[in-house]
Image 1: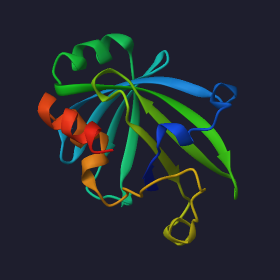
Image 2 (image 1 turned 90 degrees about the horizontal axis):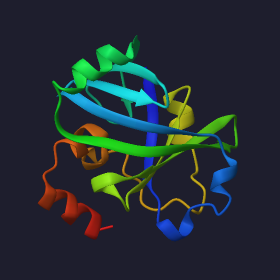
Image 3 (image 1 turned 90 degrees about the vertical axis):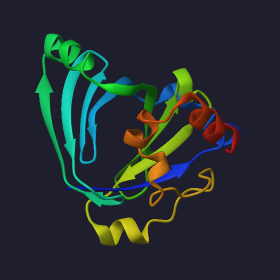
Length: 161
């Protein structure tokens, strides 16, 4: 089970020492968006992920893929391929902020996610001051939704931030 909250981050609020944190280069695409069946390249590893329906809380299962399997499945996806750098920033209470800095057609989008061990902890969480608007319950900011946006919708989203 995945329990997470998601927040927009303004470019000027991103921590200045970002390069000092561990990070991963991610590329992901979607075979199905509802429920989600996603493939992801994370640095040099490949993963197939199933995510159930939901926003803050939903079922999640991951399965390893080979590079060849990933490449074959990538040709079967539709929509946008999401590319981003994910920084892992330690947070109070043994939590981790995953700060996604998007690239490609989503350059200018910055999202922070925090995964929680349970709903109670998630609901009690007080975000740091450098977070902007919470978008946990706005499906617009789910990567599966972003993957299906056309160029005009993408431009409109980025200009509204």
